Image (cartoon, rainbow, N blue to C red; front, side):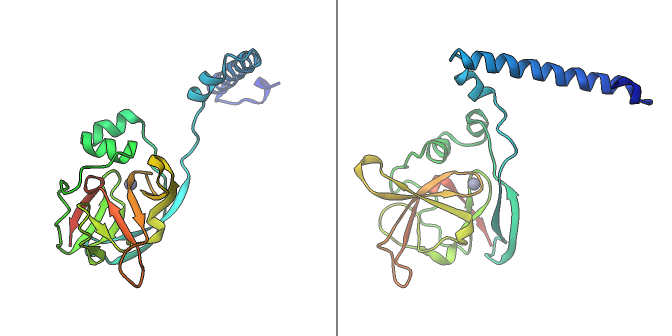
Length: 201
Ligand SMILES: [Zn+2]
C-alpha cells in the first residue's frame, strides 16, 4: 500500500521507510536493554541532544553601542572542541570553573575604550566604562554590559556562598559577583582575565 502511492520517487521513499524500520529496531533493542538495566548509560551518551535552546542576547559594537536584542542558539561544543579552540588556561577556567592566579591576567590593567567579550563565543559581556580598580588582582566591573548576556547562579563550593557568573550564550565560567561594589549598584563582578578578550573601540 505504501508503494502503490509512489510516482517517480520510488527508491528514495523505500530507503526512507527502511531507515525508519532500522531506527525502530534500534529503539526496540534500546527498550529491551533498558528493561534489563544495562542500557541507561549508553542511552544517555547516544541520545541526540536535540536542537540547541534559543536565547535572547543583546549585541553591541566594539564602541559599546547597543545594536539590539537578537535570538541566537546556545553554543554547545564537546570538551575536545573547546580544548582545540582555547588556550589551556582559558579552557580550564571557562569550561572547568578554574580560577586564574591574581595579578597575572593580561586584561587587568587595560583601560582603553572598548568591550570585553567572551573568549569562547565573542558575546559582549562588559564595557570599559564599568571597569573598576578593585585591588583584587582580577579584572573587575560594577555591571555587565547587558543582564541578558550573563548568567548568575549560586555556588556553594569551598564552603563559601558565592554567585558564579557565566556567559549566557556558551555557559563559559567567567568569575563571581559580590555585593561590595561601589554605589549605586553595589556590585563587583570579579572576572578571570583569561575568560575575556578585549575588543578596542
Ligand atoms: Zn560565551
